[in-house]
Amino acid sequence: MQLAKAFVLILFTIITSPIFSQNSTVKDQAVRVFLDCSGCDSEHIRKELTIVNYVRDRKDAQVHILSTREFTGSGGMKETFFFIGQNEYKNQSDTLSFSTTSDITEDERRTMQVNTLTMGLVRYIAKTPFANKLQITLEKNDEDEEKTSDKWNSWVFETYASAFFNGEHSYQYLSGYSSLKAQRITEDLKVEMEIEYDIDKEKYVIEDTTIYSTSNSKGFNHLLVKSINDHWSIGYKIDMGSSLYLNYNFHVKLMPAIEYNIFPYSKSNRQQLRFLYSVGPINFDYIDTTIYNKTREMLFAHELGVAAQFKEKWGSINISLQGSNYFHNPKFNRLSLQSTLNLRIFKGFSLSLQGGVTMIHDQLNLPKGEVSSEDVLLRRRQLASQYDFWGSIGFNYSFGSIYNNVVNPRFGN
Image (cartoon, rainbow, N blue to C red; front, top):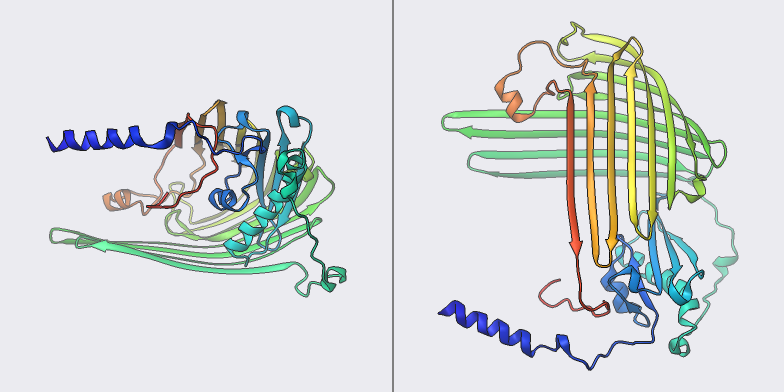
């Protein structure tokens, strides 16, 4: 009986709500905008930039705004907005960008986003009855005339540390991670260095038995890339460190590399098709004797990778294929494929696919002897496997009013 009353109350609320009202307050003559910006605070933008109409589907829009984000040498981000005219604004497109530093606040970044979007939309708003609401001002100061100097010579340093713990009567977990990064990124040269330390500790209590599990790893990574032209780059990468899980007391890898991008690097925020080849020595010092009776060895290997990235109005696709093998025996090889696809199928319906698969035939580091049940269950040691895979699929479908102007934060979003 109570359930029936609740149902009647809900039905009454829906019937008496104004969602089917014909007295629309929508600004019918304002520019219809589809904001395709995954890194934006869309609610803030809709509250601050109210002179346009926001629609839920790109096909209903007169202007499709597509955004991309790239890391800059200062540790910040370069955000680019592509204003793509549709219908009566077809062939009227523009591109605007702004860059942030690593210490910028979220509110400052949102303000820069709104300002950039406003500037880009002026040309479209100017052709509507709302043009008389526009007011353009220019703020100028003496600093604009001064040439900036950088005492750090484009070097940026960053340190990070974190800890996480949880537990209950029969289980406790503690994790710690720290890193130190240094990088210098210019148009001609890219230099990156990073030191990392990671530790995980677990405790299990099963009746009268207590099981402890500890895993840790340390690493140093270094990358140097020299630009040759808008398509070619050369450089090298160095990886070294230790890992209990991977049976590495210490390992170091030096790989000189060359890369070719079919598309100019200047267009990397929208499209990339890169081929990367690297070759060099790898030295291993193992914790336990391996299944090939080795405690240490030096091997030569090479890698070939292909990566493609496209971001368009219909969605985006990222796909990478990488293969490697050791020179002394080609049967020790690895092939990995990963892909992310976000696709707008038709009005209101979008599909998301992610996945990866790796064919593994190069586990020279596996320790000799039997692996205990504890190591298997707690994932303390890497196990023999010829493959691994992962994947996800999702879809979204929405219908109803094409407008998306109103922000109402009551009771959460």
